[in-house]
Length: 264
Length: 247
Image (cartoon, rainbow over all chains, first blue to last red; front, side, top):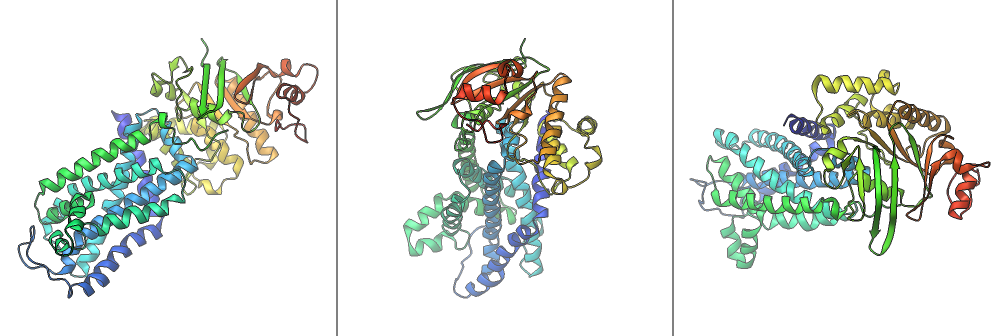
């Protein structure tokens, strides 16, 4: 067992170290949600009336509503950036190094996921601290309850990224994936508007949002921030994780030979 | 028992056969050059040996472990130096080595001891704390060889490890590899440069996915030069400088 934990530690440390050394990435990961929070939400609060919906027990401002969605966005971007680094690693050879380790491939990929999730959690807490500095804070225990929710949602989004990375052959395809994965997932979710609000404009859109696993990740985070467990959301998130992880394992199976384009 | 055994291995990309019934048996303590022009199938064979590809045709054994049935045990006996650099440039030499030791499940005092030992073996001990970015190409390669030895493998695979290096670095890396073979390791060295091969080395000539010859370099060369023997075998032409099996 110690060999497994040693590998986990090595992979997580490497990922965290790389992240901390990429200051621009760290900076961007914080600026993006802060712009949404401080600029977009401030302008939008007048346009959008929110009624009291669980887990909120009183009227809330739009800035408060949008925080869980932005937390989800941080994790979503981070997961996609991790998979970008996987594609990059595949080309640079470090993925080969990882996959020729004598530990089970599934475990190595899971370690990679956990490492990405750990980095995203770091970003989330820095963001929440900044939000609190701007006067947008949550109940204190919520910050603790949030942690397990972030682990689950981070793993799910990471597994999705892993699945995508296993099917992408070339780096330049990734820009398209960003457009076709990140934006639809974010906008077709409960991150910016509650589902009942969506339903007022289109039932179809609401239904799409309801099956989007990102919606459930955001709701899991939202409820956790108020010390509540959303079983339905967590069930969906775990299910989505399982499906993506199995898909990624399939994609990284040597019999599928993801390195095929390189031959000689 | 042979420490390295590839038997009747074939591999295709769709309808194009990249490897055709390849059989190679090698003993410990040898330096074996896998000689072939670009496109001969060397990289495909390396991908199969490192379990990045799998094939149903043929078997591969590393130190007695069947790569298909027991990939983890087989991989544990294998050290690999890939053709593309696989180093984190902004990490120190030691950091890179520790990361690799971690991937192999080696930690703590054992990892430290082995890292120190491989660095000394490759004369890199005094560079341990430098960032990889500060090292020249030859030293980076040497470091990758040191890294591939941390888990004390029986077989060391090197995929054209001297590509892009100057003459002095090439000679140094080739010398280190031969020293490692003398110490009991099997070195399997893919190349298209005949001047990296010494008379007593084993040579496997791979061309269009087939093994055309497998013998001592001096036997293959006969009274002439190895490059001429290679050219005659493959029906190509020697490189302009007489050392490149470019075909």
